[in-house]
Length: 424
Image (cartoon, rainbow, N blue to C red):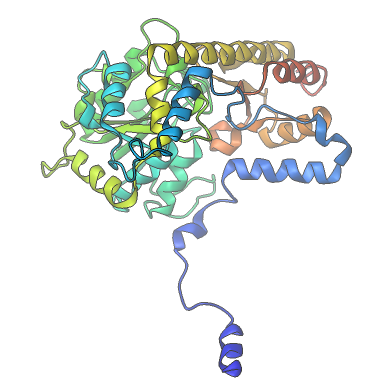
């Protein structure tokens, strides 16, 4: 028996082939790579560990406000009583919460509660949409772009290998140049089956105008394609007349899916609650409903968002919760103003920070990763290199306004003193 066990343990490898698509992924997901470099710096400079300020990953830092927190507490307390206990819920989400999302977030549209699928976040739903789309579609992403759109497309086998420019074959990259406010020239973009678009944008902070979104919807309708619209930062939009949902654009219900999340404006990054809207009018070429397939994915691959967290979601969308969210957004947009001021101190152009928590800074030809390293080493401030979001982000740096106010002020003081951009 011991001999057999020893032989089994001595086997060099399992006889199971690796999914070849994972071998295509470049380096590692951006934010763990940032963490790795930060850890390496701390290991080499332990005396500076306590001085590090993060303007990097978009993780919120303000506590969950009182009324919203009371919804979470109430949801948890109910589970401790016989009459309040609940087990599995509907995979699509609590009916009351779906109704409240439809009424509160889509008041200016025709979106109905049964078109809303509650989940554990927009990032997770992007992957679930990819399960639904499968490997046979051609996807298009913005460049620069949130890495999840690209990496999930790779994982699900939609792409070829990486070319000399660091971009994947069989994936359409929509160049979003600075001079066009980081909106793509759609007449230059090849057709794709699925277009991924984020506004307010991560990483650039750019916000698409109504006219631009009308152009985007028109293009999707013309191509017979699906537009996946990431609206996770929509509540940061304060400028009148700028849409906060793609479904404010006529015709979008026939071509668009929208993902959203409570993470960034209700402090739910750790609580995990979001939703995806799939309209009944959205149909495949054979006339079958996209909604039915997404419903199948949700009921097969997901057991529903936590009942406790959904109680918090109900509190978020109450009148009291909305006031608390407005206060949180005002706080983070105030931080963004400080970071805009930092860019001004350095004499650098930027976009974002007005209707977005991100400020995307033009480095005047300096390398994104080199500037990241310089600022970390000289100022002990973590930023995000634009190159991590695709080739179109090279030469830019992203500042996140989700740090505490005093951290933003101190980061501005430290970085504004370095001379890397002097004389440019």
